[in-house]
Length: 165
Image 1 (spheres, rainbow, N blue to C red):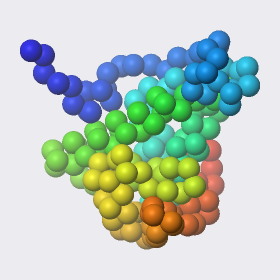
Image 2: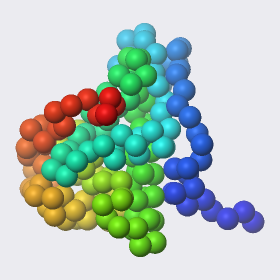
Image 3: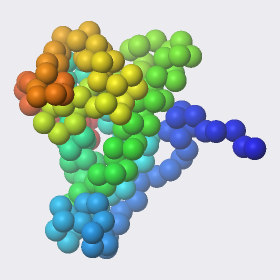
């Protein structure tokens, strides 16, 4: 039986981004693209963009998707693959942490939020872990309804286009 691939293996799979010019009706991103093309990124590309976030900065998955779309000069980035690859990047960072890689060399996955500044329960350790890592950088997450959110996330977005760094 083949060995299960680690998140690090998936991240380093060699998969490359590709452009979908004819998005099937009903597919994720179809309505948003309004007839334009969509990029399906790669785990390594998503990881590289997240690594450009500095301490004290955050962005949403939608911000990440917008950066990918601008980088590839298309209407939209695939919402499903971008979320999967961001999660894969987070899991790979935690695998590296377990191997003893210094924190400053890890991908800062905790800086990626859901729409509206909400923390992501699907990331390693759930919202509690993400909140603790953000707090270590001076970013406070507080309850908003039944979920944790970063209230000032919009002010903490990078003031540059990360896809051009």
